[in-house]
Length: 73
Image (cartoon, rainbow, N blue to C red; front, top):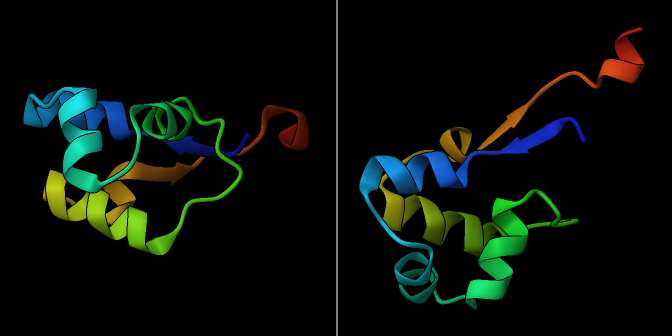
């Protein structure tokens, strides 16, 4: 998938556990895992805003686009 999720990178920079982040954002650890692993089909802007607030970052720090190898060939 061309959208890459870097939540784990920001969590490491902030030295925050998944359980703590999920609790502070107000989502379940299972839903955070779905987001972190790039398996989510969508993310609510309210959830993205809460992640940015807790991690003190911008949306671009959590999500980035990469060209799909199959499409570039």
